Image 1 (cartoon, helix red, strand yellow):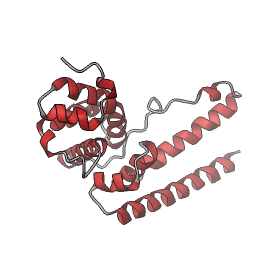
Image 2 (tube, one colour; image 1 turned 90 degrees about the horizontal axis):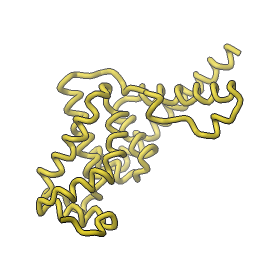
Image 3 (cartoon, one colour; image 1 turned 30 degrees about the vertical axis):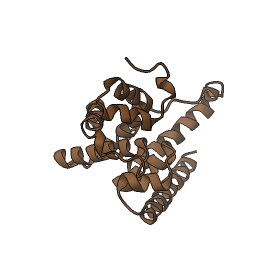
Image 4 (cartoon, one colour; image 1 turned 60 degrees about the vertical axis):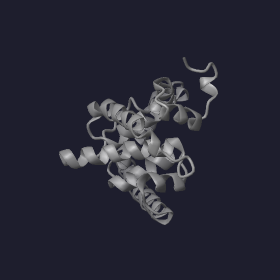
Length: 197
């Protein structure tokens, strides 16, 4: 039976229990981190029907390789995202996917305040959101990964470097190039939008 204060346990404590083959501790980690991992896998994978399978495989690997995790080297979430990232890369190689990620409006819902705005304002906001989604989807894979991990998942540059297994300077370079590409694409969108008005 799991301890009553399971929700208060740190990832390190839960992983110690996973290493002792406590499946309830793994389930708790899945509840705690599954949503963020699912969101990342969804944005990185061009075939959304595979996202659940990839998420399950990531946690299966956590279970199988729990003894390999070293808390002094990386936080659990960093290690988990690294596993998920590797699974995406493997899947891309296996099926030789070239297509960018699927951009689905259901992942990011409109702000409640936009519902109270005039229909034309809400429409313009949705157009801008879609333009950002398309621009992110068109980034090269490594730039997109770095940007999603940093901006959407709030990870530090060092955590992103650990997940992508690159240097901190390389992460900073990827982020700078990604932001520059996004800016260029969004400027094009604004110019096109203004030309049609």
